[in-house]
Amino acid sequence: MDASKSEPPDPCTLSIHRAFVIRVFGRVDAELAGQVEHVVSGDASQFRSADELLQFIRRVLRVYPPDNS
Image (cartoon, rainbow, N blue to C red; front, side, top):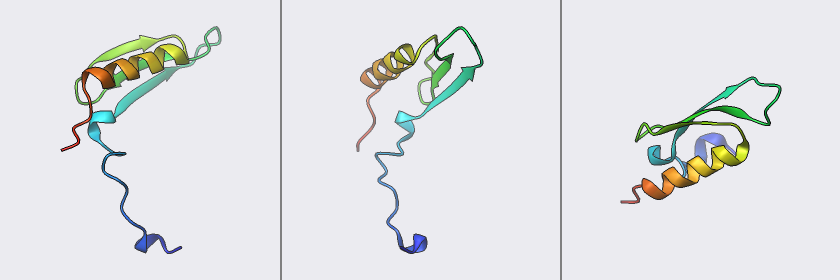
């Protein structure tokens, strides 16, 4: 398939309201550790596991739902 003729991505999947910056710290004693920040709100948190990271993302997306207008 010719890439120049492909359809543009769905704007909902690329919404800035769903954008996060994730910094991963190299730690041997942790499954996954780092800091996550929601781009639009600036809400940020440190995490010490994948579960904590996902909990933060879910919480933020409930508080700041994507603008579908």
